Length: 268
Image (tube, rainbow, N blue to C red; front, side):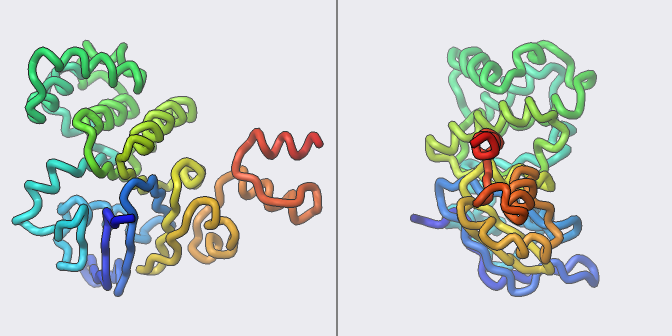
């Protein structure tokens, strides 16, 4: 499978602090990758380097293009990135007007705009926000609107940097169900997050620690080595932590990644 992200021997310092040292990472096209690490490990730095906001060396390639001034216009056509506070970049008065502006920038014909807005608003549950002024909606709602804008033109690669951090459990679950559909249809998704439970959502997990990529595995294999997470100071997903303790005491015979399956095992 082709790589959508290729990073080789990357070095990055912030002032006198070493953030990455000879770090390498490959993310395959079509995956849904969750990137985790303790606070200050460099998750946001890496997200910003992928977006071109931080100057990177010539060792970062996205969708086959090196990140440089020549390729940034092309990358903007195929890559969308949503940051935690992207809602501050909403440029018009109402939510609907912001969506229309985005669709027009993607050269969507006027006759198709209202239909596209209606479809994606329903899927993400923001129909009630369309006529509201962006100045009065909550920060969580702004995150939803920013994500909606990013999805409007179906980018090849979607990068989220704590972009869902303010959503409650139910909203996050709804959004992730939508993102899974986009992923199944071919969109590559990278989710930088501090929420350990997000590791159970996608297909792959990357762990960052001490300026290195210390793990890059399929979700089905990453939890075979639980010590990896303690060494990286990364909290385990609740269900993994709970089932590992139950396994230790002989209550169950394996680690579970799903609430229902764990409950079923306990009732047997």
